[in-house]
Image (cartoon, rainbow, N blue to C red; front, side):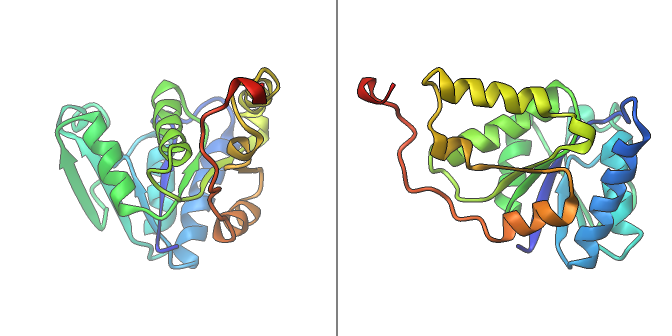
Length: 193
């Protein structure tokens, strides 16, 4: 993997470890010579991931819509800042630039970006690994909901297994490095339910 997109919050959240792990992820990616692609902001976990990479000689590309440039405060130390018109164009550009995705704690925007990339993978539009760094169990309830989707017949096991999770950075990166996309269709027949 040459570049990984990181989706995460533009705030720090309530636990100091969110910021610490975001910074450490940026640092670890830089040490592995893996570039960071992210939302381009200088605030919250977004700023922490960028700073972790930049301060350890990593390459960081930010992708930011014009209308968020003033609200999210564009990071000034990036290798490259790409300005786009829409949120959809932002995700498309990030997908074009990356070999995989890691999601850290965040809010609605983080989840929307994460689920769109995961859905694109499920539909076979890309074969990139999609991971969650589950810091302090932040995503435990979401992962339980995914289990419910499988149990209730709305998601196949093979599609659930596309979602790589760990609470350890190195473990998650190792899972992503060895990931192989499934060759199975997403659609579930009545007979399979």
